[in-house]
Length: 109
Image (cartoon, rainbow, N blue to C red; front, top):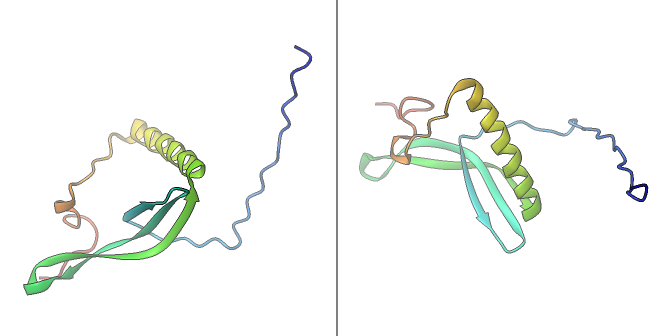
């Protein structure tokens, strides 16, 4: 067993000096053969045609990553969500027809 290579520890330094923080309550995903594209934004209630309520998706940020990075991201996000739900209970996801009702911005009456 002496022939096994030793694992080398690498120090990770995180530079947040150019970081920006934005809020998102919606995501749109699209893909190519090489990449995953994630558009983060905010759904805002607006007045639609003939006064009908509608939602407008304002894209604020786009993240493009390769498939390996997307898989690592999905695994990490899944772990974070599982840990949150173990402490706080299951996160309820509203059907699209109910989004914008009860929480977040509302159309003025």
